[in-house]
Length: 144
Image 1 (cartoon, rainbow, N blue to C red):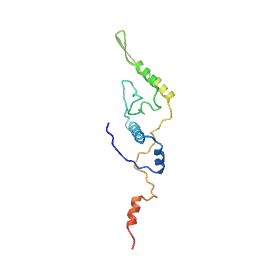
Image 2: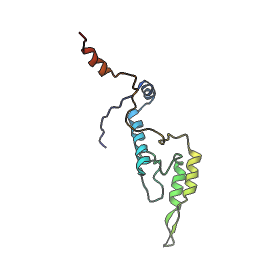
Image 3: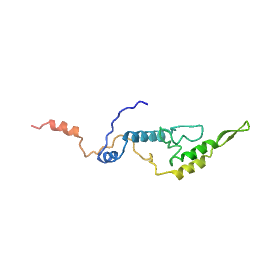
Image 4: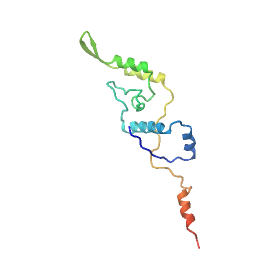
């Protein structure tokens, strides 16, 4: 996948926070995916089951897994229990144990970063502060 370099503006507080991240780019990509999934109800990695794959390289689907991912062994068991099952050459269909896998995800969960309530409107600028470029412009204008 091609990478695109983009810059963001941070204030002093968020700059200090960002310095604690080992990989800011990966963090931003994950935040953008979560925001997009929340805003557009877009699944990250659909499967033949009612749930997205919880260990996708694209991140965790917040629609399917709001409480975090289930253990991998539980996911494999879940996938094996539903859908089309062949028994002595006869196909039968079974519902996936969706409530069970959601419970396993809750048991395995750690606090998640919630995307709800984040204001994504235009930059909120402190009106009392003068931007550096404005100060430079004003410093060039001298009163006679």
